[in-house]
Length: 233
Image (cartoon, helix red, strand yellow):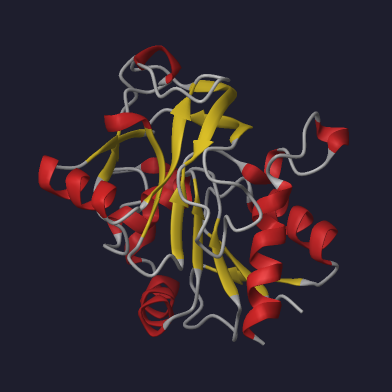
């Protein structure tokens, strides 16, 4: 069984998408948790969905990071509960300090909505064990602030610890400047914490989880979560 909770902020617009994907793949109901609540139910994974929380005022994810529910999300994450942040959820993870760095305006200064190729650089996390290292997958992006930035020391640490999980690449798996849609440093599309239990990524796995949607490369992320939970039981 996978007990998943999805946090809903004012402005979330992918909360139902990830709920449908999780329930369709796992067969288990998902708890939807309002941002103003004081606590998250006991969960095997907490998901911070995509969208435009609080209208992206101040900085993307900055206000959401200080919402009432995030105090418990942060506490549970530090105690070992896995957390997945997708797009705006990745921004919230960075703004709350659960992941390093920040998501800046795209280098083009334009909103980008299209499919991209990603190379799986770490297949050891609970979210990626159903992928293969160096596997190239296709997922959609839809963001104006996906340009990952951190200082060189932080980037080097992420690289040395294997915490760069997904990287923008060509279809052949090369992380070239041309394959980078937003200017993210080192083509970084997703990172994790040291434990591998907190993952943030800009692309949307929930938008390509079955062939009827045009592709199923996102499905294995959900299958990875389910498998990890079953193995830990």
